[in-house]
Length: 212
Image (tube, rainbow, N blue to C red; front, side, top):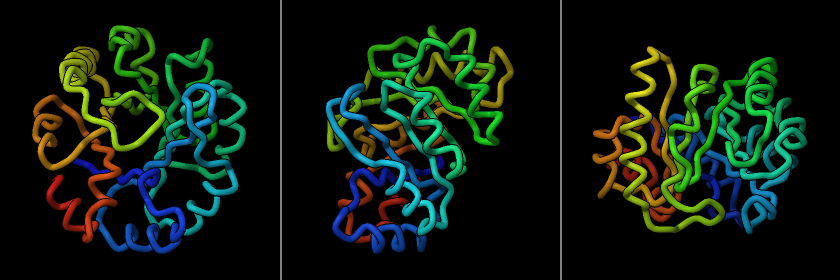
């Protein structure tokens, strides 16, 4: 199980120190939620803050766009060169074109599904992405309770990936902790995004170890 701490749950008053602490751990990615106040009722990071995070972090970045104008935000973040750049299927009309645009910039494209969106919507685009992020909470705020029906979606998505013989990772984000992490693994999830559980711990490495 790969682990990606969500910086949304960090102490923003000491952001540099928080990133330094994560650099000392063996976490796999640093997950960054970019929210525009329109697609979701919250505002988070602009490109300037993400650039600062990128310079400080020794971990590859995993940027999750929770925005309406996807193309506009892609322009802001392509120069940062994250490992993954993911956007919501619900927010984009020209999905295939946007996926190829991200890949042409040397970045791995990802697609995101809200809790109510079926994995069947990915049937004709799954072959073009490197990552599918399943939201296990309603997007917009951290600290929400895990929506267990997302596990069934992960199982069905894993079947789709195997049937098409694809090299695509499944990521899950929302309410993940040491009590439900085994269910994610059994459902075929590859990357666990965890915010409050890790940043609410006194020892980030210990929390990551418990998730693994």
